[in-house]
Amino acid sequence: MIAPGTPPADGAAPPPATPKQVLDALVAVGATVAVAESLTGGLLTAALTEPAGASNAVRGGLVVYATDLKATLAGVPVPLLHAEGAVSPDVAGALAAGARDRLGATYGLGVTGVAGPDPQGDCPVGTVYVGLAGPGCGTVRHLTLSGDRGAIRAATVDAALAELLAAVRARAAELPA
Image 1: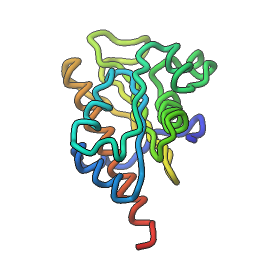
Image 2: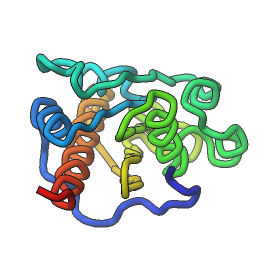
Image 3: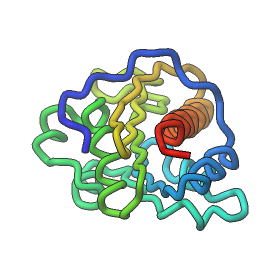
């Protein structure tokens, strides 16, 4: 589980990844993924399930668009939601950990942010957090995206896929041959 207060990952963003590359990498190491997504409204899970054979690695997805569902379905602590709101790095991390735990996956992805057209509280449009929870990893990446609502949501999916592929490849490199 990602500890509260985990800072956003600071290195360079990983290279782009296709859903097929992600699924192939997961299957190669016998791993699975689950998603808890807010601003993408199911687009991330849809991308992961697009390639044939997705059922070999995708456990499922939770669309937790409403704040209360982040708590009831994904297990985000209510005090955290009250303290930080729905768009924060800690919430993204809790979404990832909740998806992983509640859906019984090796990896969990959690995405939250503001796609627009209006800001959400103090968070400007384009503020996005991508959380990843898995064996030996728990990270949150802060993104500042531009474009219209569709572009921000698509870029969030792309970023989440890239984060997951990088983590799975890093873990695979650590495993004995």
